[in-house]
View (cartoon, rainbow, N blue to C red):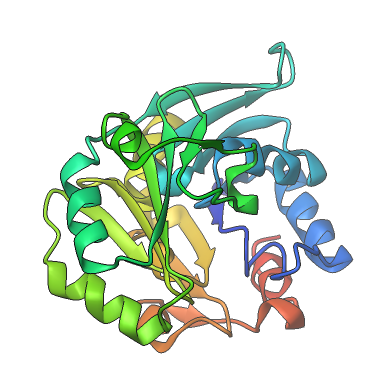
Length: 263
């Protein structure tokens, strides 16, 4: 049997939108690992917020991608903390922040810096950070080297927000708009797919033996990259259109359905 590289999104794939992991999903992830395949987490969450998922499924060795490809982890139970950061991609967010503030005046901002800290304006906090964000001024944010920039506007509808972002014609970065008025920004060319491709080469897995499952706009590149890209049933149509197949929703245990085909 050829070892597969199985790349799993977290929110909306492994866990539902309340953070709950269904027992059958956990069981099938463990079965895939015990069958000898490489299981990797590939998430927009920061590594602080990813580690509880990694530990919950018993992933004690291997690799994972966090912050939408901005950070890659090597997992090893013999390491003091059980992991080490092996790659981190950064960018200068200053010009993007200026454009966003002018175009979306209601927006709040947070940045993951190159030490894994989160800095934010207006007490902006989200579970995906994994740590308490430190409040700073907008000017201090502009001077920060960023791994991930998060933008959220409570005062705009998803459509209004997406239209505003599109009108900016942002260059030199990679970005994806979420289900609501939410924006994730990374450096140019940085995505879950770019992080996973580097790890694929380390693991010596053939491109045809890569499998990716996800449900969000930040999963598009990953689903296109994978030899077998699977969209969750609740994914937006734009995400489903780039996938090779569609499984059930997160509430239907769609991930478990896919994983059963690998054992």
